Length: 178
Image (cartoon, rainbow, N blue to C red; front, side, top):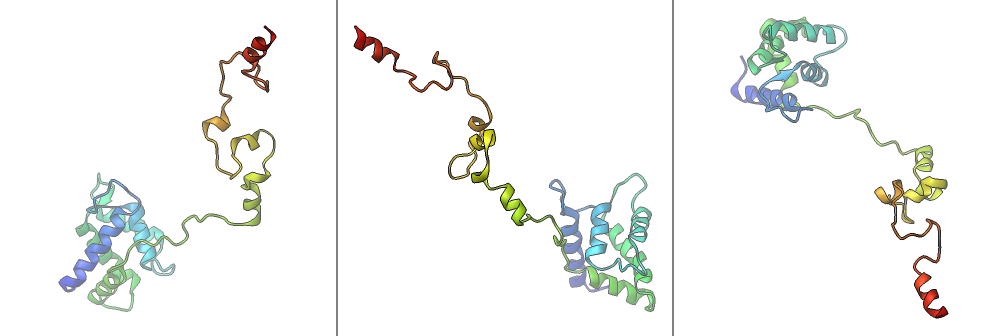
């Protein structure tokens, strides 16, 4: 087997992939999706010798029958089963060392994750100064949304019609007539 420092790096990589994308994970068990991501990110899946189907089959082989996740020991066993398939020209021990080296110290990559589109069409469609009609009422002059005030018709119990401009002037008019 490999040295203890290498095993520490392998364990670190296992933990990083185990918690990737799962807020409740504690890093002791790796699910099938993250196992496939680990194999893809660490270049174990090469498209020729090892495919994503091979990775899924080996995951099913090493996990417990009723379980949906693998432990660190099962993870090592899965890598040992993948090694001869990935590195065909090497002996089993050399292949295991090579596959461990591919995984050691690696962490999940976020390349290809959804990015914000910044095209002219998106800028034009999201420019609040160009909005018209009822949509214009939902934003102030700076382009910031008004929230509930801009979405709902807030009822005023003043007794005046909604668009009446001289609201609140009745009392002053009546006092001047007397």
